[in-house]
Image (cartoon, rainbow, N blue to C red; front, side, top):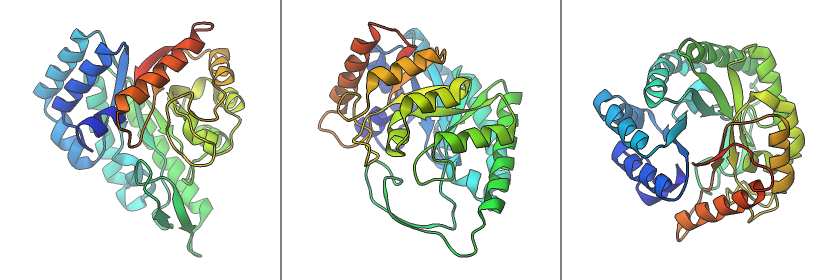
Length: 299
């Protein structure tokens, strides 16, 4: 998706996604994921069933599969109690869109609590990284966690009724930020339809031992994002350009029996993002020749 946002605009149209999927096919990817980044984006681009069917026919003709739909606009709504009912109603529409796309996975990001006062440094989106995080005296972790669990449970139930799974992409400095907190959430929600987007870049900055994190989460890893960085700043460089030890990560993913997609998740400002993504793709393919895991996808 970073390719589409960098090559076209911040909120790509379905016509832009047509061009994105054509590029993905021409460069040897077997699938892709797309997103609605705001509610206006969702309503403008994904509500028209005729346009949706045309888009699906287009990427089917390219023999591509849509592996996930990111409901990006839900991230703040999930954590804000005043937005809960709206989030639940929108989730029903999201399930319809995902089903139309042939994607059985919906995911959103975790988010910081709206009461936290955060000063952000622009990196590749508004979340990366914070310069300061001030938590007000009246904040209650127990109350916030209880509400969060209930909202995630209800969103997961909606997804499940529509034949989909629901996942969170967990990131530093948010309510759910590491493998252990995600496991706690999964246990609290109690549904096999809730899982995680295993993003190597985010987890590496959290100082996770990536192979151990993969074993902890096991079959709750519904999707894998491959991104590299220095382990300090949450950059999303092409695999092979940072400090992630990729052989051990891919071996761990294989060990847990993961057979889904491996999404190359390069983000940021580059002179040529296509070159960056394809460099990461080739690097991972070289490692996988010895021990194949999943399919590599454009993200």
